[in-house]
Image (tube, rainbow, N blue to C red; front, side, top):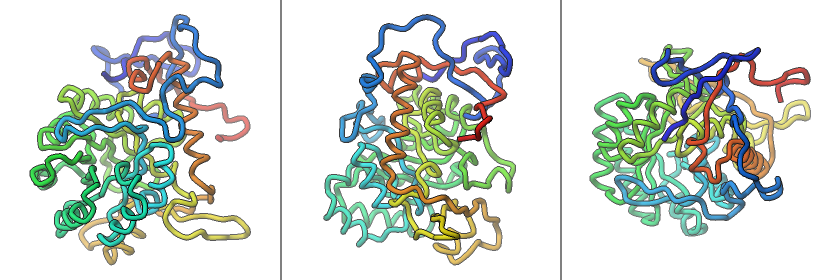
Length: 376
């Protein structure tokens, strides 16, 4: 059940956003707040006990999600590191596993790399996915990895544009061969395509075209969909078939993660928020005494030169490369995100994360933050 939008009286700096029969307005995370309830809630635990909202602490069990096609289940915290080679690394997977978070590992590790990782860290294998495109050799590559590491239970079939018959057929082929593996597939932004992919065999659909911090698809192509609206629409479609969705892209702070869950996302995938850490890919760069790490989109000129020899003549780069200030170990960032989500649950009266979408409404705003002392 996705978030519902209740009519609110407009106050200075706000506008009503009504769902259902009214005029439909598509919005991003930046354009809404989650308002507090209109009536008092039952007494909550004091702040030191806010984990009553059942967003687990380090190593704790999460709520169980059951998957439609694989018949598998997941019990961790449903926050995922994106399968970018500057984020979805084995090192990131090890760090996130300590908090029962998930990692879609980027597709540029070899079979031998996977075998070594599984041998050294068998406890981590159940909280990672092997990623794949749909190009020549991709099906054979994931088949080889899954044969070499049979403990792997998740496959992420990832393309920038999920609106093609070839992509749907690829998902069907993966499902036919790997009947008990949980398949993530995307990216799409409409309910009809979500339903198509679920019926083709996918369990979890990645939702998002263009919202990422280093994605330039909207600038280069004009194609995209406001992320919050895409999540609401796609969650309704997926849940109607017993499927699940990932909100992929657009989160810039813990509050955005809460908004994605509140809108109906079953999982939230993060890229930029996890970039620049010790566990992120790439070397530390130092300029004028300040340390940085490179972060780039996987359709960027940097990524294509690294992995494909350059940008193909028929297309344009759809990503950018940035220098992110070095942030140190990722565990500080993870604690900040989880703490924010727990507090959201407390504000709206959700006893556990699964309840958040049923407790969430949104109000449209013209200003997100008080910026007197900056945007941080």
